[in-house]
Amino acid sequence: MSKFDVVVIGSGPAGYVAAIRATQLGLTVACLEKETNKMGKPNYGGTCLNVGCIPSKALLDSSHKYVEAIENFGLHGITAKELSIDIPQMIARKDSIVDQLTGGVGQLFKANGVTAIEGSGRVLAGKQVEVTKRDGSVEILDAGNIIIAAGSVPIAIPPTPIDDDVIVDSTGALEFLEVPKRVGVIGAGVIGLELGSVWGRLGAKVVVLEALEDFLPAIDQQIAKEAKKLFVKKQGLDIRLGARVTASEVKDGQVTVTYIDKDGEKQEVFDKLIVAVGRRPQSQNLLAGDCNVTMDERGFISVNDYCETEAPGIYAVGDIVRGPMLAHKGSEEGVMVAERIAGQKAAMNYDCIPNVIYTHPEIAAVGQTEEQLKADGIEYKVGVFPFAASGRALAANDTAGMVKMIAHAETDRILGCHIIGPSAADLVQQMVIAMEFGSSAEDIALTVFSHPALSEAVHEAALAVDGHAIHIANKRKRK
Ligand code: FAD
Ligand code: AMP
Image (tube, rainbow, N blue to C red; front, side, top):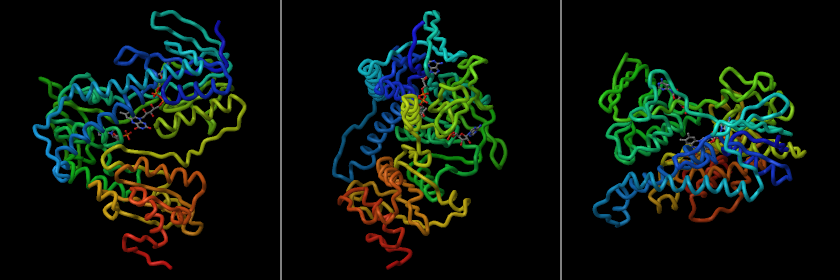
């Protein structure tokens, strides 16, 4: 029986990062991956690299360039004659990026001495892992420690069964080989908005059906309001809130979707329907009954703040445990667990995890929203700076949105930063770092920022917290 200090189940961003960090710390590590990807290669990188973060961003980038060429090149004095799109080429470019990155994880495994095993893992009692290989053979591994990083899969709902032709999930929505005339998206969450944006930019008429009455209820509502205005009025996304999908019928390559809103039952016909109603942990057939690892009623493995399960020496990280389903959250949990196994006292700051929606403009946030602070009765002050007043944004013809900074009313400590605008993902990271260092709004206000740069909007928002912004009229005048 092979023996490893650590056996990692799953090679997504949580699992492969944990595996690499553990080998760096001198531990012997096996990392299991059960799936092969579209290219027939091991699914290293999991959802994120194969069918999630990276391929969606590749298509968002391609489609953004197309919109830029159509809508904005003229402003710059550039004329592109006979503009056309080659969707199979766009998809092939996306696939080659995926291939490069997943292959890169395989290389990193080799370079770091991680033993990669292609097979499906199951946790047995006594810290053993049963591996079922693709040829059906079974091997038992003896593990000093086990890290479960089996990730998540798209949620399916009974009214709209996935047929991978007309009704697809997020994975299928990355594979259309032509632009559908009409696309329906169920769910106005992060994935629905990103994938709806891709096909909308390329020319599809996109209708988003969302059961909730509020748009993006988890994000700061000033930012959500701005986002909805931009998506609906400027980008033509037809976002229908309070619309619960109840049935569908596929016929002659189209789907008729039935939904209920406040006015009663309605129907819409689409060429493609993208079901983006969330993801669920991939925890079936993963745990032997006597392995002492427990999960909640939704299938999330129960862990404490250090990702320890109830069974000593068995950990779980990433989408399969509580917390935001984000690649970087899983990776950091992977690092923390590897370091704790190696005897270090690593911990994770769950209050400081950035969250991004890669629409255009991007929406990015860290920390608490105004709504959360009000609910908790915490006194705060707010500084807002619009990109319309940023010289760099104007030069780039990208002025929609704002930076909103929230600081504690008395201590001035930054409590949250919420951005909708160009490069919001990169801008918010400045505030993640600042918050990790316990920064006040004044610390940011006293920092020198390059000119002209989009990050000046972050500086001005920090100045605006105390009424000192230079390039807008301050609502509150302070000395
Ligand atoms: P996964 O990435 O799901 O990986 C788990 C791996 O384990 C899989 O490869 C699976 O095959 C394997 N596995 C499962 N069970 C077993 C078993 N029993 N034995 C062996 N192997 C097993 N997040 C972001 O942070 N930013 C984004 O921009 C972003 N965009 C996204 C876009 C889309 C369209 C989607 C679908 C997701 C996106 N996400 C994004 C979410 C992100 O992909 C996940 O949060 C992340 O992949 C979770 O990592 P993980 O390692 O926990 O699980
Ligand atoms: P997220 O979990 O952020 O990806 O968002 C998924 C969204 O899908 C949530 O906002 C749900 O309210 C929404 N949703 C789930 N089921 C339905 C349904 N049957 N019809 C419309 N929207 C739905």
